[in-house]
Every structure is written in structure tokens, then in C-alpha cells.
Image (cartoon, rainbow, N blue to C red; front, side, top):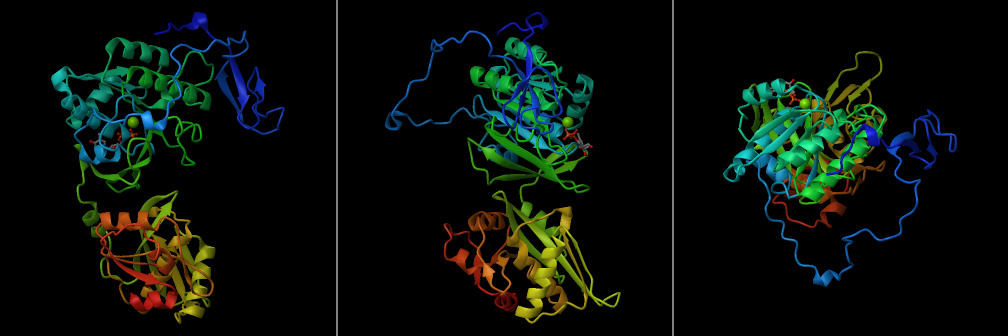
Length: 462
Ligand code: TYD
Ligand code: MG
């Protein structure tokens, strides 16, 4: 390993992320393109004499027909089926994985439970995993591990934030897996910026990736999702890593979902469900029951819709309530859906489907505090309002999706198969979907499918 230290400190430069302009100092505004806040610290690696000799060990071009099947064997399982499935069947040698999520959702808990499982899997061969915490002391990490019954002799803890020292420990210890909690707390002494700055996150992740690829040690980075929903350094890490898995949970609910957002070694349609208990995370093997159990089954105004933002399917419950107007005119109150869209859907319901609630108070809410901004939930919202207005409940195992046009027509949406696969996984038995989607499905999902071309037909079928 290359020796690094203050003596060999390289010079930092600040590059504009928008136009590529380079400054020797940080500036708030790029003098070249005049964008604000785009200068990010980097190591100055250029500048010297250009060496045009090819680096040793260069890869050679090869015909695709001659490439042997890359049998991805030797996957490391962590023994938690819900995690292994999301990772595509365990950790591949050299895999570089980002575990993202909101602060407090349970990433450290999941990580320590995974690492314990991995040490158990490889205990026979003197297994060691290195858990580096930049956020907590060794004592705090051990306390949590004890609480969730994740104590194993092969689980080595290190409280360190200095990247160079972490890499030197890893080189000495030669762990089977390296975990960094979290990437935002780690800094390289070669850069001047503080931990968590885009430049630091990028540099540290890059060096850790080189370590993972060169040593073959699967490396897991924990990353906090920042307020605008991105892992620090806007999408900086997502394209560098092999897999991005998000740990999600709604405030107050004990349930957590682990989803692959990107995975070079497996499918991104898998998800794992967990329950956070006082004794740590417990796997939930049958999420459909859990999901349906929280809904008011048989209550009018409740409809499950399938949203697929960025191709990731999420099933959410839309609730509607129709009440006599409290003021002279009907009011609309919506949470989780766009109020203009709701106004439009109510007009379509009144004009095209003979369901007039324009003079009443209408409340629409997406349960769980989720926000959905996709037209595919139009049909579901309209059905929920109609169900509430007519006091007729919609079958609890029926899913609805489709975009509504102003003429009351139901339009096709993207990712129909993805939505249906999720519904089938979650135990739904029936789905109302746009006729155009119905004709172009790729797979059979084992659901009873009802092709819909007009809103009025959908209301009749429900
Ligand atoms: P943590 O793993 O520290 O979250 P993160 O690393 O994502 O910030 O856990 C966060 C919360 O989980 C914490 O507020 C308490 C709760 N928790 C439990 O309910 N049970 C447990 O066994 C543990 C360890 C944590
Ligand atoms: Mg943590």
C-alpha cells in the first residue's frame, strides 16, 4: 500500500461541476460560467509531465464469444434471507455496495446484524469482518451489537474517520468484508475540505472502491440520505458503486423496507421487509399480510394503487372521504397528491362518470405520509373518491392503476409488469389496468386482470 501522510500532501484544486473550470481556491461562484456553489475540491493529479507509456497490466480487447461465462460464485451470505435476496444472493467478491437511508432508520443496526451473519457463514475459515464506525465509539457500537445479539469474535470494530488509517488497518487485517459507517464521516487528509463535503465523499469512495476491486474484499458503505433525498454529493456515489440498496421506513412505523435501487449482480425488483424491535431487526417473511393488515378492510374510500417512480414499484393506499360541505362551497383537501390534479379528477368524475361530488368536501390522503406525483395513480384516486361518495367498499385485494384523460379515457402507463409483479408479491389477486397495458404485458403474474378503457367502466367493475 502506498504510504500517505502530511509530508506528501498533494495540492487541492477546485473544479466547477458545471463547466470544468479549475480554481486554486474555493469560490462560491464560478468565474467562468457564473454558476453558484458548483466548485468541488479535488486532488491535483495533473500538472506534471505527461507520461505516455501505457500502464502495466493493461486489459486487452477480446471478442465477446471468447469470454467465458462469468459464473458469480463465492457469494457471501449474511444469513438474513431478506437481505441476501435484495443483494442478488449475497455479496460477490470485490462488491462495492452503498447502503443508504434516512438518519435513524436503522442502517447501523442492519449492518451489524448482517456482519454478524457473515462472520458466522465464514467462521470455519477464521472469518473476520472489519466494521469501521466514524459516528460512534467502539463502546457504543458494541453496546448496540449486544442488544441485537450480534456479538461474534470475528466482528472487529474500529472507530476511525481517517481514510488513510482505515485503509492501512484493512491492509493489515485482511478482513473478509469491510464496512464503513458512514461515508459522510470519513475524510482523506489529502484534501482540505471537511468530511461530508462532496469532494471528500467522492475521493474517499473512489479510494475505497480501488481497495475493494484490488483486494476482492466486499465493501459496504453506509450513506445518509440528505434532505433532498439524495445520498451526499448528489448522486456522486450511485454511479461509482456496484449496488445501491436503500433502507426505508415511515416515521412512527416499526416496519422497514430494503430495496435495491441499482444492482450489477442481481435484480432491482427485490425487496426485503423488516420489523424494528427492541431486540433489533426481525425479518418479515410475509409482507403481504402485514401490508393488508394495516388497512381498513371493507371501508369505503380505500383503494390500493401502484406507483412506479423511477421504475421502482411502490404500492400505496389512497384514502378518500366525501362529506357535506362545511362552508357554502365544496372544499378539496389533499395530502400526498397534487391538489390541482385532484381538482381535475373530480371534474372528470362528475362530467364523464356520473359521479358528481363538486359541491361536497373531498379529502384525499395517501396513507403513510408518502407523496406520489405520478399520473398512474389517477384512476386509483378517482375510484377511491367514487367509492367514498357511494359508500361502497372496494375489494381489499384489488389493485388499480392507470392515467385518466379529460375525456374520461384510461391511458396506458409505463412499467405495467413491474407494478403487477409487486402486487402479486404482496398478495393481491385482482388488478384493474389500462386496456393498452393489458394487451402488451410480458409476463403472467397470476392475477385476475381487468382491462379498462374508460373511467365509467372501472367504476362499474369495482
Ligand atoms: P440505527 O441503526 O442507529 O440507525 P441509523 O444507523 O440508520 O442512523 O437505529 C436507529 C433507531 O433504531 C434508534 O433510534 C433506536 C432504534 N432501535 C430499536 O428500536 N431497536 C434496536 O434494537 C436498535 C439497535 C435500535
Ligand atoms: Mg448509524
